Length: 460
Length: 177
Image 1 (cartoon, rainbow over the protein chains, first blue to last red):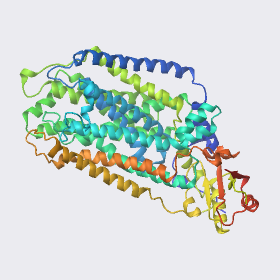
Image 2 (cartoon, each protein chain N blue to C red):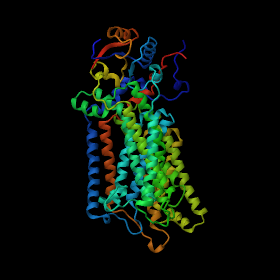
Image 3 (cartoon, rainbow over the protein chains, first blue to last red):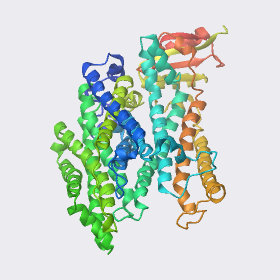
Image 4 (cartoon, rainbow over the protein chains, first blue to last red):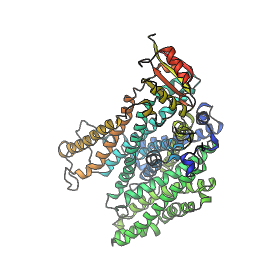
């Protein structure tokens, strides 16, 4: 009898679980952090993050109390940090859905170790994103006008407006992401329920595990459902940032009114989201000892996607400039020259260097697989992508057709604190996730191990 | 036969031995079987002999309802309930209705998938006889179980239990309601 050869060994794929851990060991590794007492560093980090979230709440309270005037917006630039942060956070979320849905359909097995993590990030990022448009309406207590809710004035929203499409896109995106995440969690919640020692843990995890027993008939519907969710999330994630880009592209403003926006926004969203996943993953795999499950190979795959999408974004920047010239419209040409050498040139060039230049270093395998290098580059990408939204929103708005309306926008301290606070909220939710839920999809990782193959150990 | 007996449960150590045991039991004539595993084991559906899931049909119907209701809502609002004149655009601008129709289709289909899956699986079911057995808690970590249910025409408590250990099952247990 010849020796058993797993398909992945035949074509020499890097193993996704290192050091030959068995099924039980993997359960222990992933459930450990949920079952142990929170470490010191977690408590300190949580304290810091929660103060950030508190800062957000107080800034929003101040905004509602005093009005939009506490922000630095003016008559010309009426979309500032609010919309910049909204697009930034929604974009961050896209990596999660890309990993959970699109890579699932493409049968990229390496996604199994990082999808839970990235999906959690999606949900928290969309929560942070939703705050900004809901707050920038000015009279926040009227926000229900955004939805088609029957009311005593018989008023209905305008369905021909991209801003309304956005309401539907973002709320659908949030709901579907949450469902997808929860469905993935059910078997793992059952794992924690079955391992729990205390009655309260058995009860709470038990409630959310819905009595999952791992029956084959259940797995059959479950796997089909998971595949279907992946299939419907794939066009959804592409639609969400396309619709966000319509908020700009449908307007007549030079710098906004371009057909390249939907694909350009989607590529940028995936770019920024992957950078955020890398930033958080580098830290978490270190502090939780998950290096055998979230391997360098995983990170390298992510960095390749950052390189690819970063190059697409760079192409889009170039194409925007080309079209501004090729269109022959003097307003369009001015908008772009103003980006590069106008009063906000510092923002434009920060964006170019962070998004176009630094990620190109990932062409080198040494840099792609070096933890410190990828950590620094991923932070650069995060910063660069925030600036991209600033460039698109603010620079396009501040000088338009009529020079007498030109103005300069600088954020007020309230806006800056709100941005910092939104990071606080994001990290608070993320730390709670790391503490209370399994950060790796246990059942999915086991299913892709060679030992799970029904033909493992047999001769060919 | 005792009335409160639900099934007989045997434990296996790997997905491979479990799959082999299912095939053997099937050949021996057992029909009412179920396996319990920490992750889906490929080939198990055919080995037990269950039909493909009907879930896609539920999702298709839900998606179609979402699409249709998105179209109906926008058409009714824009052409009759609340006519808004904006930049001279026609009230019935079906092209502009596409994004919301699409989003509602996805939303309804996603709800259909999740709740359809739960209903087909008869979940939530917080109480189950299996939870009372000694070894079953390992099923969500590393335990592989084969259950032969009492409604099987060949079922006999002692004989079936013996048969389960014969085909490689360990810690064979009688599951009582």
